[in-house]
Length: 273
Image (cartoon, rainbow, N blue to C red; front, top):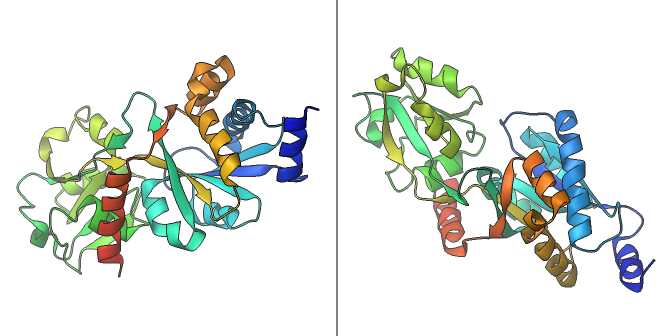
């Protein structure tokens, strides 16, 4: 073992540091994602010149199990959706470091509120309505970061988490008091739906980071993060790294747009109080 690898092993201790990915409401399960997460962890360790097995990774498609896993001592890195980050950053002491770029997309995405044509003219139109979204577990994100610039939503408008966006949009088309907040990928797919002509976009967010890589508390020393940062950003340059990225449907990792993220934080905080 080289001196560098020995020092890394001593710093990390006997147990690997864990990268915890959390994407509430999105497809896949912890078990299904594990091979792809193992490949990502191995490529990250290789890129950071850390010993094999010194980094582990796991994925959670539900918020509570992911939150519990991030609370454990070995969870040093988080790869999470922006709504999850805003909801839990303070409690978990998450520090945003990088943005994950989805495959075939951009580092930022625009969230779009859709409703049946002619039914929603302003936020006041949503009095007593339901706003369904995959991000509904984070009402402060929906009301603030995504829709705050449109205007203040009525207190009686209920934000509901739902990964069943097709069903939600059908409810809207059927005339139920339902609006649906779509992420960037869902918005892009909207035009392919047979009932798309019955819906209209009534509000859009500004560009927001899609997913965030964060360190958890002080579990990652500054010099260790510098090595990991290089590994994250250079992953596409190696065959193993490129394959690992493709396995998690990610183009790569880029620096966080601090101005955009700060605006999202402020908008979230303004309605979360």
